[in-house]
Image 1 (cartoon, rainbow, N blue to C red):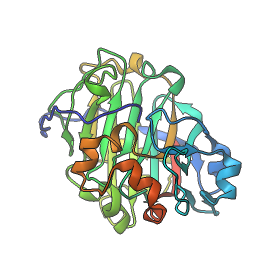
Image 2 (cartoon, helix red, strand yellow):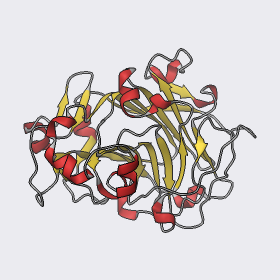
Image 3 (cartoon, rainbow, N blue to C red):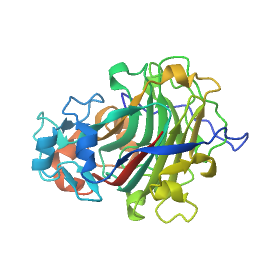
Length: 321
């Protein structure tokens, strides 16, 4: 999520080789509904990605109805009523960071909706911001301007690469994870097997489940659509334990073959945020290629009603260790 631009390198992944590992994990954190308010800290900080956004604190988010919780759902959204004057602070939105940090773990995100609209840049990710990039970053859900599919990406300190070809469903679009090169494109995998993995397509099917397994040997990311009969029931039901060896081929797979994951990743927090424009969504070439109108900042500032659907809706986040 931090300072990234599109990468020019594209390498096709294959299904050669086999995925290592798979293990049983026990539920350590179950975050549902109002739990989001006690499990996360609202970060009213300047946007590190130079977005056209103002992140607000929890009290402001609640008073402006930018977050809303019931017993079984949590919504995080951006302002969709205010026209922003040229040169004024950006559109109000929310960024939250988990109070707990995790090393070896599995996290399952049950999402019914993600932000959509031109100029939007939503992300669900894990990082240690106080030690970025040395502490590592894993982008689980990320994209801009409704362009599909989802991209999952690692950003690290130098000397971390992933193979161009491995056992995964997605397509590798960059192999050098080093945040100091290639405009911080990182080593990314696009979920090309499923256009419903991001944006309006995701929302039209009622969302689904994203999951990450992080170990010192590999990092795997899965996506299952809401109606996917093959989705593992331990992941989708919030079971007390999960066994990732039964979850099938991941959408994105990052092995430690050319990256010592143990030294490139600290204990990381879960971060969820919605920004606008900025270094990626607002990049002039990226924005123009998406088919969006005007310039990114002008469009976002002048069209609040375009962001009625710019919201996350979570049923739960379950973390296993």
